[in-house]
Length: 290
Figure (cartoon, rainbow, N blue to C red):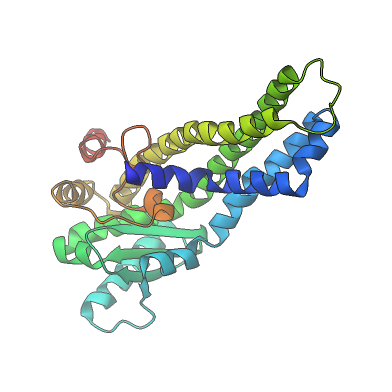
């Protein structure tokens, strides 16, 4: 339950915080005082919704290094590191993307890819993953992460999150305005928003944020199937990815920082909010693929 709460807070924090800032700066008061101009509100919602999503995207790589404790391999120190770098290079060339930065982080089995641009990304694997899998399975996992980069999944997820944030901001304020107008009907004091507007907006920012998180998680699950198929394509056969997923299914995957959950090889919370489909579904989808 704690992980669910943390994940949801990550997704809606930008909207709630920006909403409070907007209230303190008097933006909400300006909109309601002017009859809640829908055009102005939509512009406001777009800035709030996409602003936070794209700021998160642009700082995703340095934040990932810091939050996961990634040690970037600038110069391989041993044969294992040299093999990892060469594997990333080989798969990236096949995928037609620029060479990502390559890193290792301490922890149980997991891996992730992040970055705002296809040709300036980061692929990182955990020490637990390197110790628990064969080279072929590790290569499949790296292929999965390279496929995420090649598919532009980081940008896609930022766009989807931005759209959801925009709807949350827009709908919560429209409904808040209507509720406030209903509660204050017949009142002589109609200057600026009332308490009904503020309470309704804050509550709906949270409630609609939960619904938006479900939609974002659904898109993330579809993206995982595509990255699994991408790994199979990059390796020329699907069995290594199937074996890697089966291995993961028998391990306890490591937890990534919440901002990286959707970009990991394994992760997710609950059914509606899970960023990843169940391992057995992913294996079945690969087995059925042509």
